[in-house]
Length: 331
Ligand SMILES: NC(=O)c1ccc[n+]([C@@H]2O[C@H](COP(=O)([O-])OP(=O)(O)OC[C@H]3O[C@@H](n4cnc5c(N)ncnc54)[C@H](O)[C@@H]3O)[C@@H](O)[C@H]2O)c1
Image 1: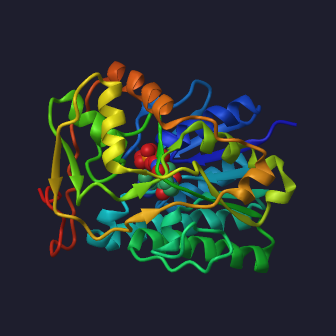
Image 2: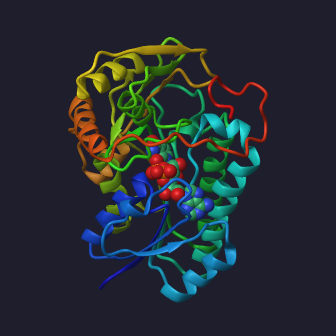
């Protein structure tokens, strides 16, 4: 049987890879994306593309009526975690209320499974490593909206039997990432800066650590998850295990472009210093082993970035609060 899947945010980075994998699995794929952060040329051949927003409830209803989706993969969001403090209303409208439109429609149309990309941002400062059985205490509006959607999915399951699978990825990088967004994606930012001959900007001393996850290690388990009954109504951390400092990352990225790292340190921003998650649970259920080294993954992404070239950094025009806005983020 051929399944029909809705992929929101499918013109974006992770969404375009999930769309590609779902096509490989034989799904009919409909992508809903407003192109606020995605690109039409990231859409894999064979998807049906609808340009529009998840915040447009009548459009969402029409699509569910028209296509009778078996699965919903909800990836659309504006994921600029640090910026979310300063764009609170936009964050909750786009990332929370937009999700609610999809959950309502999925309940009414008896979708078989709703796959949601949450984030390790839900954990807040928490203990390390972050494990799925911890009680999340998100500390920024982005993380709060992700956790609210998680809780709403649980409530929808209890009340209406809507099945869900929640993924909490972190620091994903690879081909198709939006390297032109100055508010997020440190690897893309570094590549964009190098290609424009600019120094690499680092907030704080660069000793903060993150475990950077190559796209295939995230997109493949997400797309296949709907075929794995034991994944239903569960939450999974997903991604790479090993944390690296942002200073080391700057070295690896510079090497991939054959340049010496030139770094400009900026005032530290209010962010979690160390963040890494435990992946035992997802490895057990999805049987994936993340074999991609940081150096090889960065090399692959750099080869792609060199082909597409630098992207002009976009400004976010509707900043709602300017107090404490990090250096370089005003317009
Ligand atoms: N990249 C990461 O490291 C990471 C980590 C944790 C969670 N996530 C989550 O994974 C998902 C995908 O992230 P990504 O890194 O691919 O980002 P991305 O910006 O590349 O992709 C998001 C896509 O959603 C679209 N979009 C945004 N708002 C929309 C709306 N209202 N209606 C329709 N489309 C909309 C954008 O145009 C974009 O194509 C997001 O939900 C994000 O929160 C990403």
